[in-house]
Image 1: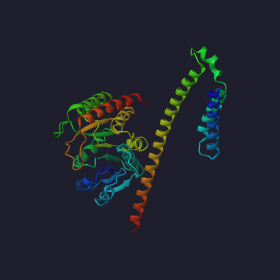
Image 2: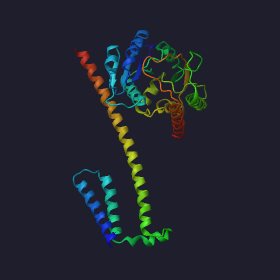
Image 3: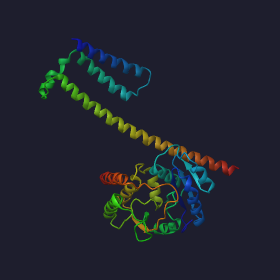
Image 4: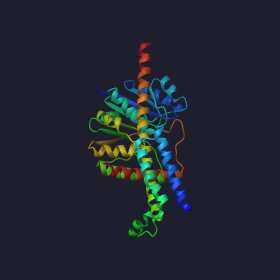
Length: 116
Length: 233
């Protein structure tokens, strides 16, 4: 019973935290949707840990909780890959900006010289 | 102007205050008819100032991107300023600008001309894993290009207007990607590549990276870059 309280409270806290970040416009919507749906899945599981036992045994996993752990790790792995991808894209974007800034500065100093 | 073509020499430079001045002055001395653009790749030393004093146009990246990043900016400049030919020359003074007209001459036939170190001229040698990487790269790329390319990682290369436009929007920033991957892409797009033998001189400043461990890492990266480049469309 105590474990149920712990997991349910954790799930709720995560939900509140995400909602707060969203409210303060600190999180882009695409991430907010992702994490909100995670929270919404986690909270009922915290309250009723045996909820997944049926599905778990049908795919050959003894306990529902083990299935949750497995899916959780897969999910986190995917999130990490996504973040690497996102970081690569951002680097490409800042690279383009850096080039544009350099070109503009060169152009400006050229004009200054021709005005002298 | 060389053969009626507007030629831009692009010199990517990072922390090259020691040698950039001499390199730029020599290019201008030998080839007064070309324009020199030094792309300062976010140096913290006086690279930009010295290059400007030596007579080059300087464009400065706000932070370090690597040779590939500096070169794409160079090509972007060449594209917007309407140059017909862009030639890359290293800042450390190991490329002799006297060979430049030779490279540019060959551009009538080929889209990309590489100044190659191992093609008979000069006595540049490497050993160990670094040599294996170069042999591997030149073997695979020669097969692809259907002609002999002995020095695919050479930073002494000239390209025509078509490739300037390509490189201005697409130029890998990764190490080795800048030379190997661009070569693969250019071949795949159906452009002709050829090499011209050049002699290399010892570097004027800085230290070459040549420890055995580094050479092994270099080999690994060469293989990885090659595999990725060959599997891209």
